[in-house]
Image (cartoon, rainbow, N blue to C red; front, top):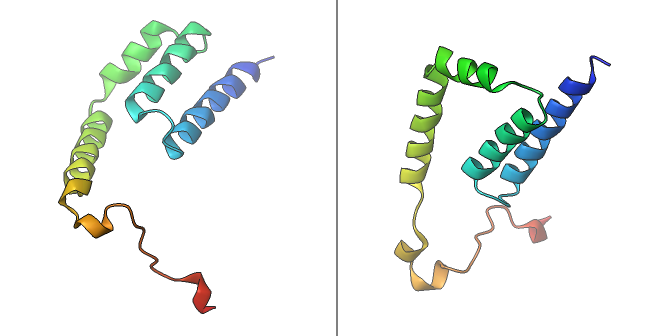
Length: 97
């Protein structure tokens, strides 16, 4: 029965990744909900969660920096020309094959 907690944790992790991948709910909300579910189901204790966060801030600094860079490089739709706002661009048209 030692495999149940890792299996549940892996399932929650994969569910969070799938929700983020398909952009159903915002990344921050989904990740916090995943952590809350892990604590609520007693997969990880609150003390262990706080200790793992407080031991190493470098991961959070890296993720924060990447998020800032990605958000700053996004082109707002309002800056695009009016004709391109609702259109997609085919990089490799499939009709040519």
